Image 1: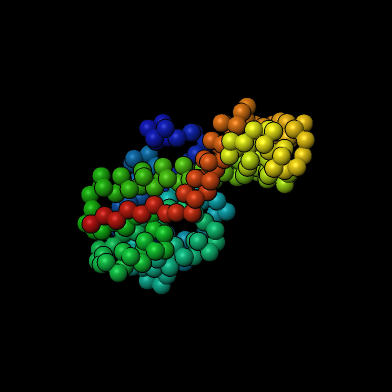
Image 2: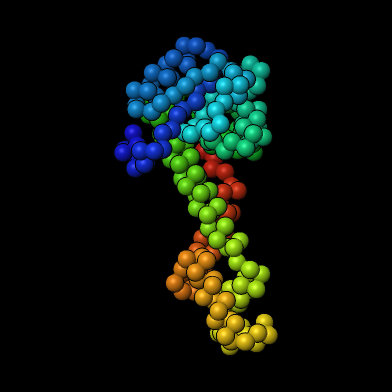
Length: 224
């Protein structure tokens, strides 16, 4: 499955199935496993949360109207535990208010019964790809942000002016330092961020800001 999706072999996703009907769980497990994806099943959200591992990789496929903790409450519980796993909610009686609540809580997708196997598979693939991309983005943002955090306050001030397009001479005047100091700071900035020029520096800073903003938003899909 990793080869089909272009995912690395060390990324081993699991579909965590939650449904209070055993026949549904068994059917979903059989289908998902036949497609080359691992799965585990749980009879309730409480059971899933009790058995939860330190790291969850893949996605959650859960019935919305579970006894006890329902699908939306499960999303809240996962968020409170700092899990960012995409959650696909399934419901046989989907109304607008429920869909809106699911969206507001950050459901990755809301799928209404009856659905085709292909429709379910498309949603699972999208969720798994999202999970992998999200992990990669988070790792890149963390490492890149650490590089910028290593800059001194003086280097940050110098960087901001250089990115705005000011010359070394102008920056030295604005910061009331020598041009030699500006050149020294500029070299240090390039080495810490691991770029060769200001164009690359501006590009990576813009990408960092965009990814940070993107990671705060949710991807929502509603199927009828």
